[in-house]
Image 1 (cartoon, helix red, strand yellow):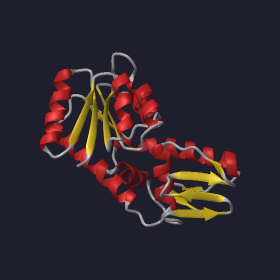
Image 2 (tube, helix red, strand yellow):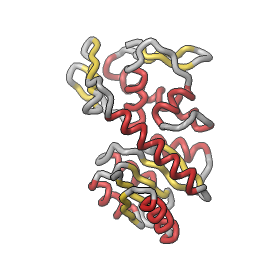
Image 3 (cartoon, helix red, strand yellow):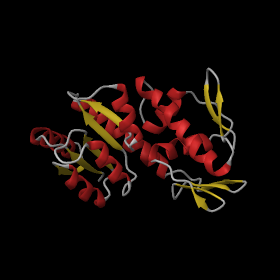
Image 4 (cartoon, helix red, strand yellow):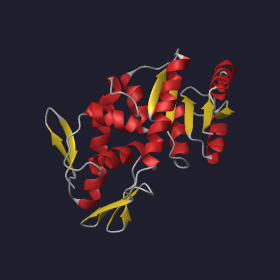
Amino acid sequence: MERLLIVDDEPGIRMLLKDYFEMTGYETWTAENGREAVELAKKQPDLILLDINLPDLDGMSVCRKIREKVRCPILFLTAKIEEQDKINGLLSGGDDYITKPFSIDELGVRVMAHLRREKRGRQSKKESEETKGFRIRYDERSVRFDGEEIRLTKTEFDILEFLSMHPRQVFSKEQIYEAVRGLEGNGDNSIVTEHIRRLRGKIAQKTKEDYIETVWGVGYKWIG
C-alpha cells in the first residue's frame, strides 16, 4: 500500500484529503504544520502533499528540509498562482503545483501519475553510466566526476536520468516535462529550461564539459 503525507493547516482540507485517499486505497499520515511535516517525512512516504501557507514554516522551507530526507514526489497545494511562486517552489525541490480550489478527482489523477512515474523509474534495469570520469548511478541516484559528488535536486536528477538514458535523441520541453512529472506537458513546462540551465551549470563546474546540447527551436539532447 502506497503512503501519502498530507500537510495542511486547515483541518477540513486535511480530513477531506485523508478520507478521499484512504477510500482509494492509500495509507495516509497528516500534519498541521511544518515541524510535524519534517518529523513525519522521516517515515519515508511515497508522496507528499504540502500546503505552501503553514503557521510556523513556509512550505518552501519545509520542502527544502524534507528534500534532505526523502526523494519522493512533493506536490504543493496553494492559492498562489504567480509564475515566480511556481518557479521558486519547483526549484526548492517540489515536483508539481495544485492550485486551490482544486478538483479532488484531478488531484487524485495527478497523485497516481506521479507515483506511476516513480515506480517506472525504480524498475529501470540500467544501473550506471560512465564517460571519461563522469559517472551516473541510476540505482543510487547519484552523480560523480572523478569520484567527487555533484549534488543535484530531485528534478535535476530526473531530467539527467531521462536524457542520459536516451542519448542523442532530441526531446522538447513538453516531452521532458511529461517524462519527469508524469503528466502531459502544459503551461508549467517552461520550468524545464531553468532546471536544465542549473543542471548544466553544476555539471560544467566540475567537468568543464557540456553534456546537454540545445537544439534550437526543438529541445535538448544528451551528447555524453
